[in-house]
Amino acid sequence: MESIRTKAARYRWELILLALIVAAAAWATGLSPYYLEAGQLLNSSRNFVFTGIMALGLMAVIVTGEMDLSLPSILAVCTVLLAKSSAAGLPLPAAVVLIFAVAAVLGALNGFLVAKLRLPAL
Image (cartoon, rainbow, N blue to C red; front, side, top):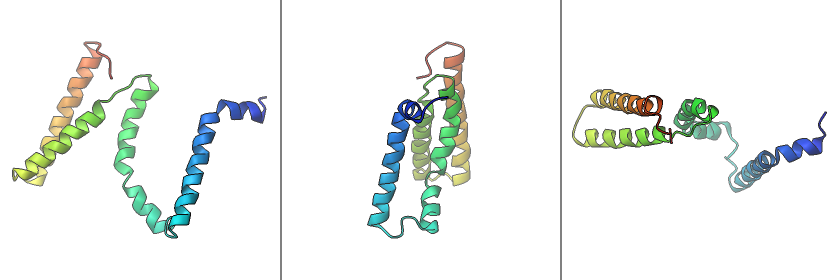
């Protein structure tokens, strides 16, 4: 059975990050009395939903020991494409369909390059 000191040494960086998160929360609470209110926490969490969904998609890649930067790149291409199509006057439903199609093609191309041509996922 491991001692507490051995476990603390093994998870040293995680404990440091936890202490920093607690310190940041305490500091933010001191700055604003609204920081820990339920409405504020729910509003803040809405902003992280999209990032969390992307992180779930990347989790399988990271667990297998790969590093894949194509998701943020495809997201950037689709963001610019949405802005350009909006500026060109394309209706939103058509632009969304176009963006999904472009994202699927880029993702399939990246998957082909990694799986068949054995290029590094990075």
